[in-house]
Image 1 (cartoon, rainbow, N blue to C red):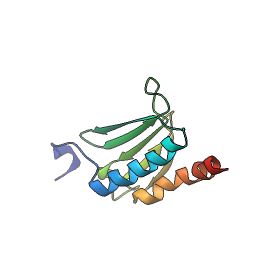
Image 2: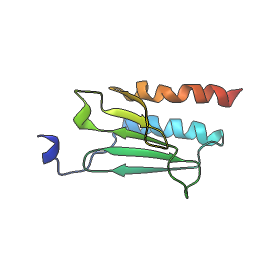
Image 3: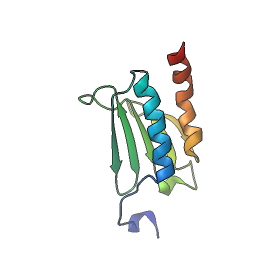
Length: 106
């Protein structure tokens, strides 16, 4: 089935969602993030995090299966839409937040 023939939305599986929510919980405990949204679109699944729910997302973590064989299906995007990290594995792209975790501890 090609991406254009996909009829059902893309979703995160249980393991992916668990990893995303653990990251979210870490930043909520530090007072950095306060809200999140999950969207299952026809071509991608998006996990967005917000400092305040009335504002735009600080970060978007996207899963795009059609890019699996090219750039990697995972991407972390900043608030202005810039790609901060792209890769084939979720754990690898979430490392972009490791620097921020270290800064929160000090």
